[in-house]
Amino acid sequence: MKGLALSFVSLVAVMLLSGCVASSQLYVGKIVAEDDIVTLQNGKQRDILWETFDVVFTFDYEISDDILQVAGKGRLGDHYQAIYTHLGHFDAYLFQVDRDGYVLDTVRLPTLMMSRPDDDFTFKKELKRVPGTVGMSFGYSGEVYEREKSEPLFRQLFNQIHFRKLP
Image 1: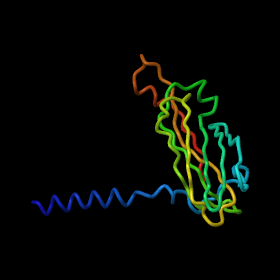
Image 2: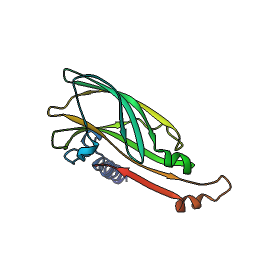
Image 3: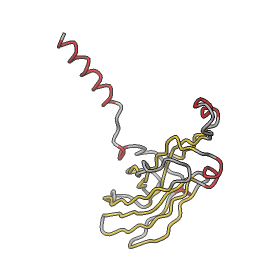
Image 4: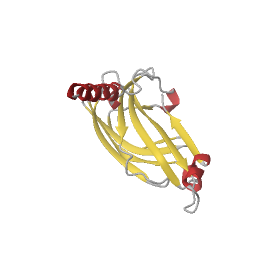
């Protein structure tokens, strides 16, 4: 009986671990659209804006030797803040890209403090600049919904919208 239980636990562990991918490998080799790439310049760059209909990122970055330091703030677009009451989930990523727009590295940004569409999040990352990196970009996926407190929970299924921009 102990052998059967151990086999079962081992099987579950293998199944769970086989589906896990390090965030640095997410989207590696995928292509980012040219319009979505911020071309990196040496030194300190301030007040950079990266914006889509869905999200707004404002950030600073500095390149020193082979280190890329990026710090800024992100938020959902005005449309989501004005119309939706709840944030189902939101994931954001920073990509290092080469001259052809291929993703060389992915970093997940910390969005756990966001619980409503009008919440902001801040990020500060110090990254080893991957050889061949000439630009960076962002990606995201999320879900918002509208539901009044008095409405049944299942109503959110009819009032939700998914959004994403990923390579």
